[in-house]
Each structure stands twice: as C-alpha cells, then as structure tokens.
Image (tube, rainbow, N blue to C red; front, side, top):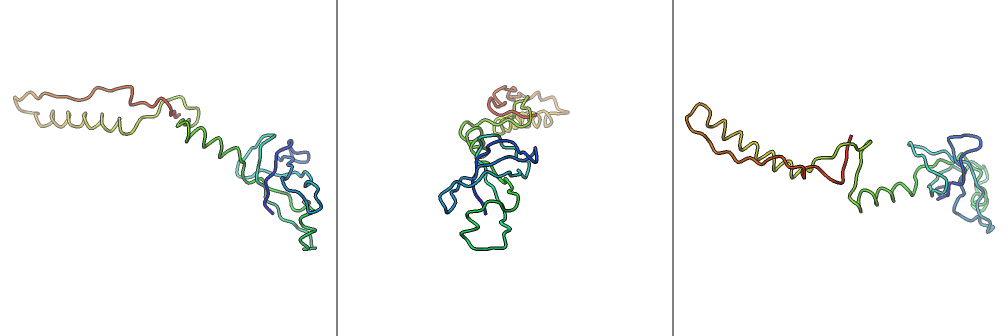
Length: 156
C-alpha cells in the first residue's frame, strides 16, 4: 500500500526511522494508527514534513476490509517527501537561484563568455596572420567584463 503521511517524531526502535501518521482513514472511520517508517535513498525528512510511504501488508487474510483496517504490515519505507519538490521549484525555478555545494564562486554565464572568447579568438587570428610581416594590425578585442559572472548562481 502507498500512502501520504506526516512525520510526528524520530523513531523509537530505530533512531534513523521516523514515527509517521498516515493520512488515510480506516474503513471503520478511525484515523490510521501511527507507525514507524524508514527513509530510503538518502532522504532525511523532518518533523512535520509530509512524506510518501510504501509498505507491504503481510497478513494471510486477504479480505480487503481487514487490510484497510490494519496498518501493521511490513515496515513502511519513506520513498519521497513533499517538501523536496516544493523547495526545488521555489529556489531553482521561480527565483532562478542555484547553489551547488557551498556555493563560494560565481558561475560563468555561457553566452557572455562565448562572446568574449570569440572576440579574443578573432584578435589572436589577426595577430597570427600578421606574424613575420611589417603590417601592424589594429586589434579590437573585448575586455573581460565582470557581468560575465552570474549574480544568482554559485558553485564550489
């Protein structure tokens, strides 16, 4: 069974696990019981986060009414959090900000760097073509501009 749940606290039996409150109501109208769940894939949700859990029901009795009423199946695994996609969307897509690692160095803006590099390439070609002649070329290469560095994106 797959369901959404809220993290209530850290685990009792396993300190790496969490106590979750499943967000479904049993067939008798009572909220599902809290249960300990273990995060996978490096997830580390916090108390109050909404997570998605998967668990196998290992009762031998396969009557659907009994399965829905009993969330005491196999140890649930937390496989996703709702917080991660929301934070990603706000920080990286809406605001256009991204920090990789500690983010101490500004990233380079690709088109601006390409335009500057092309002007330097052109200047070097002119110099190379004039080598060994009396001709003194006039070179117009763009100077390095700090606006080639991003104000929003940083990288280690």
